[in-house]
Length: 163
Ligand code: ADP
Image (cartoon, rainbow, N blue to C red):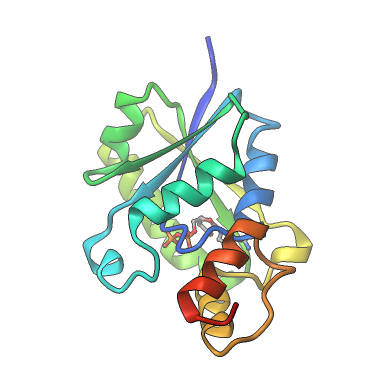
C-alpha cells in the first residue's frame, strides 16, 4: 500500500524551503499531497489567491506523479482520512516554530489518533527562509531569486510591478 503524507500550509508563496521539505518527505513517503489550507484569517490577508498558488505549485512540480497539489477548507485530519494519508508533514526551522507546531500536532492527534504528524528539519540553507520574509523583501523590490523557484520570482515581480 502506498504511504501518503499530506503537507499542509499556506504556500503564499511557495519557497525553496518548502521544496526542500517536500524532497525530504519523498524519501519517507511514496506520495506527498501539498494541501493549501484555506485558513480564513490568513487567506484574507494573502498576497496570492489560492488559484495562483495552485498554478505556481503545479508548474513547479509538473510531471512529478508522486506529488499532488490540492486545496482544502475544512479540518486537516478529516482531509487526511479522506485522502487515505497516514501522516501530516510539517517543517521545523527554528525554536520559534515549535510551540505552534506542537499545539497543532497535539490537537490533530486528539481529533484523529491514527494520523501521525511527522516533523522534518528544514534544510540548513533554508532555515531563515519564510513566505512572509519573501513577500516583505519582494514588496520593496528586493531580490529574492535565490529563495524561490523561478516561476514564483516572476509572479512576485508581476505582483509588485518590479519586472
Ligand atoms: P503555515 O501558514 O501553515 O505555517 P507555510 O506555508 O508558512 O504555512 O508553511 C507550511 C509548512 O512548511 C510549515 O510546516 C512550515 O514550518 C514549513 N516551512 C516553511 N518554510 C520552510 C523552510 N524554509 N524550510 C522548511 N520548512 C518550511
